[in-house]
Image (cartoon, rainbow, N blue to C red; front, side):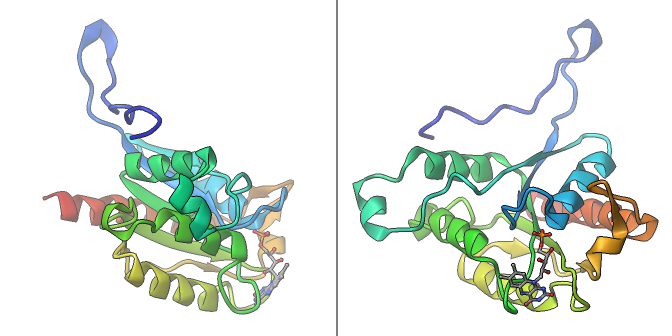
Length: 203
Ligand code: FNR
């Protein structure tokens, strides 16, 4: 690992007892927008994470455009950081917008970086859950389908169900916070399913 090792996730409880390992989820918002509803979904997921589960957000803004020449001469630090963050996470939770019926450029770019080289990509065998919010009525169905196709290429393990397509998102947020109880409950269920899905691969 170019930036040192993953945090062990083993905590020390009261009296010096070693507590159970934390389950780490890396949340990736597919939008760079400051007031992004998709980032809002992930912030809600942080609040709703079950005990023992930590969700850290990873912003894609610093990643350069993928360039095979740059990869050959040595990927820039933000790329190395990103790949390490994926490698250190037990699972990924992606909240994607839909741009022109597909995956937003920054998110596709990030996946392309992380997918290289394929033999050592941290995306290989990485459990992934998807959700997405749009202001229209499709709720990012097409973008999520496109993501499933991309993650088949990277050999990532995408959680089949439950799906979470958040439509007409503007009405569900107040002051940047997701206030819709039904959507919050569905995020909670998605987190539980992601943890169970990940444990199946460990067992
Ligand atoms: C959109 N939007 C959009 N919505 C949708 O449901 N289907 C689509 O194909 C598109 N296409 C699209 C293209 C581009 C370039 C933009 C900027 C927007 C609207 C989109 O759902 C809306 O802007 C969301 O609010 C974007 O997500 P964030 O930034 O709030 O997370």
